[in-house]
Length: 151
Image (tube, rainbow, N blue to C red; front, side, top):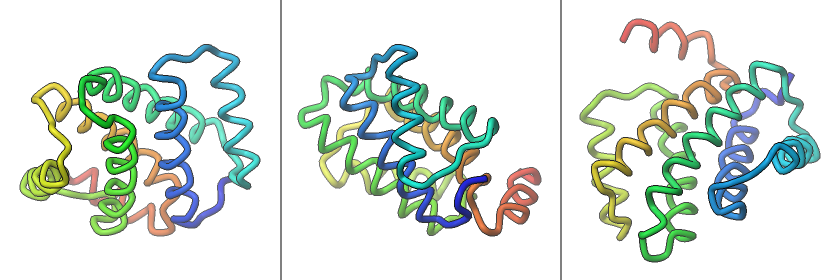
């Protein structure tokens, strides 16, 4: 089982963002296996469910990255998205409503990251996949799952 700390979430968000960026949104099975090895070298043990969730996070980040390559300073954008995602999940505990999501998007754009309708949609997919991973790692995951199920 993975470390039950939000530090694990922070590490995974950072690693996934850097991986997608380094691979320029395209990788093969060997790169995937190397990525999993790198995650484990950071002290994070991955169950099958966690590995599946991690794959979903990477695939959603790949879509966002591919749609965002026209953004000037994509590297900065990926880093900002990762950092702001970590902060957002800590603040919301993985649960948010439409108003909070729109506020988040406005804050990202205020930092100079231009988001089209397409990239906003893909960013939403990134956050939904991160929610699954956050739920697995969250110390209060039972409460997070209950509240999310009510939505």
